Length: 338
Image (cartoon, rainbow, N blue to C red; front, side):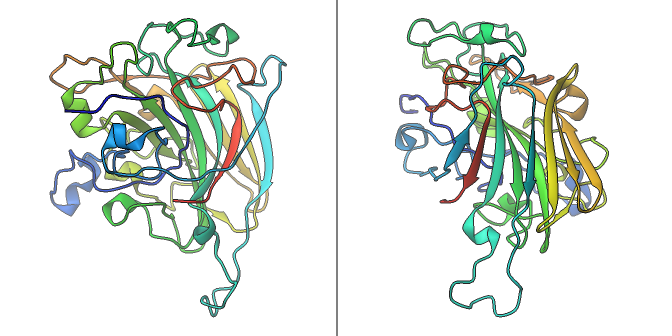
């Protein structure tokens, strides 16, 4: 019997936990068609729950992520932005055990830029509509439960030198794409739970993709996902970095990271001003993004192709993902303690 559910606190990062249910152990030649999905019950890199014992039993899924939130009442401030940053540099590889010498992967699992998105198949499961890029979605859940379904996007950067992706095949925790290069991925978390009735999604979904589901795609050089991003159809290829397709970045590279909505979903573009390479990803049905259908009485787990759009026009304490404990919409976080 599953314990009663509570409101969730936010905290994500991408990487994976234990090998999820639904993985079929077949020949390596068939790796591209093997189903794989992030299983948040065993991973410390998914959205943190307020009461882990109530939701996951004895499994602890908590972590620390100090954050900076951006608030503005200017229309568009909640769905379009640009960041200029420099990737951290690592010390030399010589004498790595020298006291006081730390590499980026030892200090954090990743850092990310966040945004609230529409997802009509996600918590609170009360209405079937969501107007993109609109503050009409603001609703105090203490007054009414009829809030549009919400998801949270984290545009995550992974430092070099740690266990190589796909880390859920080998270790619990964060991972790296390369011994010396950074990479990045779009991670969109949704929650299949009705807080009014207490009903979670059907057992087929819970056993294959979990209650908290994740769309995942690396930032690629041509903007096309390596494999389906949605958790029902994702494969080993979805989580395996490919240096011929994905944007790899050097320590100390100067980046410009932009977010904007498009007819096909929110798009992130990374311009590496040091290497002069560009990568992008659009949260579109064409890239295999999709909603895990919320149907507690169904006997199978299904997905609907979906373009994920920003939920709000502005960014404030009110433009929140209501299944999270904090007021995250436009945000930056550094994942430090797992």
